[in-house]
Image (cartoon, rainbow, N blue to C red; front, side):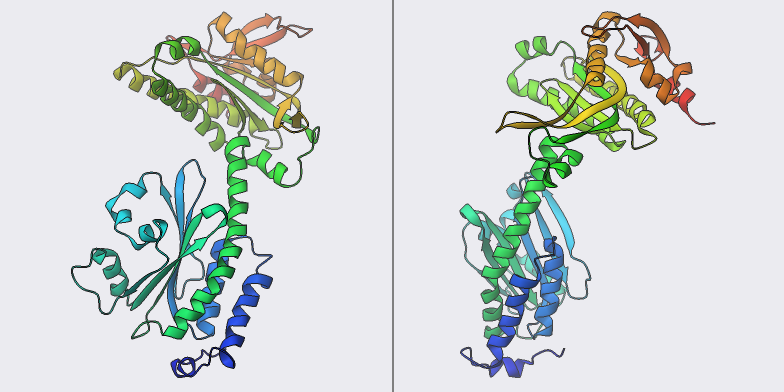
Length: 424
């Protein structure tokens, strides 16, 4: 399709003729033909390509969104002419205090401006945003314009458009783009709310559980029985620590502990289902044939991370943290449990109870990690473990054979167990 020429745009009567058909074509596409497109960045790319095909000389476009993410304050989607995919950049908390952000047109829009327009060809050297605009001009752009996308309840996001056309955008181009903003706002809000729902669920219940919930597992009692290696971890003496340390220090210490423990678990395919005060419940589904060995690797790496954390705590005059881990394997019921209105997506069953009792037993036997014989047999790592004998566990009928990592000096060493479990 050939682009509409500048001459054609200059001759357009906004009340009739060519202009309404071009505007209607892209509006119809935004409203009716993007319903099956899940990702905002794909919509941005397709929209810019359609704009160019209709004679609007967009050479660069961005969308800026504030997100509700535990790591990121916001994200920017960037398209430049010729790009088949948009570039996505995320920005951490604190970026809003930097000079680069404070002196940006994006900050103007977030602060309440309804439009920012800049003629890049006629830019003065003393412009306060000289560096940002100069980068655009160096890329051959001649005009820049930004507008807010007003989502529900005052949530403000931003769309920007730039052109490389000599003389910048025509008035008709600007009108064309501005007329798209209500539809673009609606389309992006729907996608952004879907993203936020997915992000919040992943943040609070984990990736697998969130997918189950989004797929419709929202009724009490819904779920399935799955085989899993189960890990339950608990921090020792946390009550004493929380009684004697300032609140902010306790929260930071607890977060550091969870980082050390959680990152190896998630990196090796485990799913953290619950944080329980200073405790944690995670599973490694047995659909992965390496689940048990992955769990052992995660424990090893978590131990290294905890040792590093404790070295730092000791230097800073903070408490050295100790923990206990119980590990078992078996079938668990995985699904929704709770009241009619408030549900928890978790796992229950005898196998979970065994892991919990083993974690509690670490206090008695003074070993940080205890594993059931059932897990050791499935992981085929018994040669590298210390057999501690059979223990009666509260609430369980038969005693459970218990294993621990071998001791090296004053520490349990998971590496020997991993070496013995490694394939020949």
